[in-house]
Length: 626
Image (cartoon, rainbow, N blue to C red):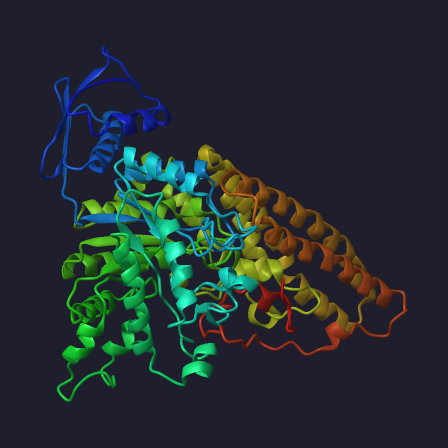
C-alpha cells in the first residue's frame, strides 16, 4: 500500500521511517492522501470519500493512529475514530536483570510495537546490568549494557515519541552487584546496601550517574522495594536496632541529594511505606491519622504502587487512597505475569489488569506501566507479554475495554491471534488449578524439572491425568503455530514443551507404582520411555535456545543450559538405577522406597499444584546452589 502523508510531519518523520518498513507500506506522492495534523485534543483518525486525516497531540498518538488507520483501511471504506487518552503516561518496564538481557535489536522491536499500540514509556530494569566504569565487577559477565547501547536505545525511542527512563536499585535487590569483594565494605546484608556508610553513597553516585547520563529524560526510578532485612545485618552490628522506616527515610534523603546534584526527578517503589497504611499501625495517632512529622520526613520522590496479585477492584482503590494520604497521587505498576515459570500466566494477568485499570481511572491515577519481570531465570520469553501490553494500551485509550476489542488490535499490532496465545496458559492452568491460575501454579516448570526418582511433586499431581491433558494440548498448540506464522518459533517451543510433559508428567508416579508391585517386566518398558524423554528434552532445549539467541544476549543462557542438562543427565542415572535393580545388583531402589508426601514447602497452596517458581526447590529436597 502507498500513502502520501502531508501536513505536520516534523515531530514524527524520523519515527515514521523506522516503522513504515515493517508495515509493508510505502510513502509516495502518488499514494493515498492522508492529512496529518498535530493539535491538542483526542486522537482522531478518519477516512471519507478518498480523503484521510490523522490528528494527534503527542507523537506517540500519531503512531497509534497510523496503526488504527491501516487496520481499518484494510476492512472498511469509510471510518471516523476518536480516542481519549486516559493517562498522561502509559508504558512498560522490561526486566533486564533476572538472567535475560534483551539485545539492542530486541529492544528496538519492542519499541516499534509499543509505538503502534500507543505506549509512550519504556524502563529497562537494570540491577547490575549497566556499565559503571568505576566498578568493573558491577555486572561482570552478566550481559550489562554499555553507555553507548543505552544511548542508542534512547535515540531510537525518542524518534517514536517514547520516553526511556532508567530503572535501577539503590538500596536492595542488589545481590548480584554486591557478591564481589569490592562491595564488602558497603553492604548490610547479601542484597542490601549499608545505610550511613560513606562508601555506599560514593558507589551510588557512580551508579546514578552511569545509569542516567545515556538518557535524555530527567526522571529516574531508583527502586528501594522489598528491603525487609534493612538494618538487620552489618548495620545492626554497628548501630544497634533502628526502625526500618527511619533508616529508609534517612537513606532516601541521601540518595535524593545525589539525584538533585544531577537535576534528576526520582521515583521509588512504595511498598516499604506500607506499614504506615495499616489500621493498627504504630505510626498513626489516636485519631487514626499519620502524624504530620512522619509525612514531612518522607523525601520528595514520586511513589510507584505495584500490585499484580488481586482481581478485586476495591483493593486497588483502597491502596490508591492510602497513598494519597502521603500527599501525592501515586504512579501505578501492574504486571504481565511473564515470571510464572516457563509460560505466561495470562489468566491472572488479565484479571488483575482489568481490576487495576478500572481502579486507576476511578481514582484519577495519571501514570501507569506494566512490568515484565523475569523471576528465577527469565525462562518465559518476554515476547509472550505482547497480548497483555495490548490490553494495557487499550485501557490507555478507552474508558471501557473488551477482550474482543483487544484481540482485534493485537492482530495488527502484535501480528498474532489473541485467542491462540491464550492457549499457552493451559500449560500451567491444568486440572487441579483454579480458573485464571490466581494462585500462580507453575505446573509445567515443576513437571519439567522435578526428578523422576525423587518426585517431590508427584503426590500433588497424582490422579489429575496431566499426561492426557498435555497430550491434547500438543495438537492445540500445533494449530496455533500454523495460525501465527510470525510466532512460529515461539509456538514450536511450547508445542515441544507440551509433548515432553505428555510423557514426563506422570512417569515418576508410574515407575513408583510398578516398583511397589515389583513388576520387573513393566519396569523394563520404562527404559525406552526414558530414552524418548531424554531425546525430546534436548530437542526442547534447542528450540528454547533458538528463541533466546534471537532476543537476548548470550549471558544467562548458561543457567538454562544447566537446568536442561540436569534433566537429561539425571535420566541417565534413573536408567542406571533401574538397570541395576533389574539385574539384581541392588536389592532396592532407595529413592523409590521412600513414601511420597505432598509438597509442603513455603510456597505450597490449597488450590493449585504449587505456588513458587524457584528451580532449586523443584529439583531436590537437599541443598542446591548454582
